[in-house]
Image (cartoon, rainbow, N blue to C red; front, side, top):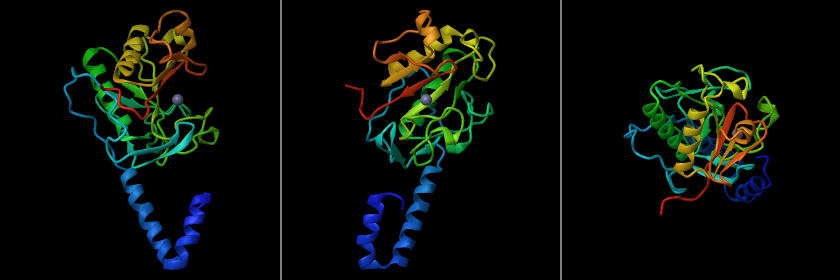
Length: 241
Ligand SMILES: [Zn+2]
């Protein structure tokens, strides 16, 4: 109850129902929300040749509230720690899998990752699996330095994800330098998110300046601290006509 709005609601409701009742209701509401957030969404058994699309804002029970850099998430889903097409990685510790509390997203983000990783694996059976790093915390909110590494200013409402670049040597680990990145596979990965309707894909300035990684202006954007992963943001609109 640290939020001012929550305190105001508490004050108003306490007059009619009593503090004990309210505490019970609040505890069960929190338990229900926690159970919903704990659900792991299996990747879709979709046709890997079918195009991936960002689902509309109204898709499923997740609600991304506020902004990517000042927001929260309800009804989120946990990305599976690994599938045949995808592994998870904690860029702050260098360990796999990424802890479940770092990989909670809006359901349409988790579905998108399942679709993109499945289609990428089908198109590149010789490649390593796609490595997914941080999405959001179970109820979103701040994900800064106190959670390890440089922290994130965004990743607060389940609509941002970091994805490790595919490496030339097929290691399921992030590249140590841009020279480790397989540029053709990286470009294909970026293209899949762009075609699906991503709002932004932030990429390695080194590869972008060298012309090894391209994309639509204003969507694919070089950004510091993205030499070992891309950052994909989806937003609250439906890109389909
Ligand atoms: Zn990021």
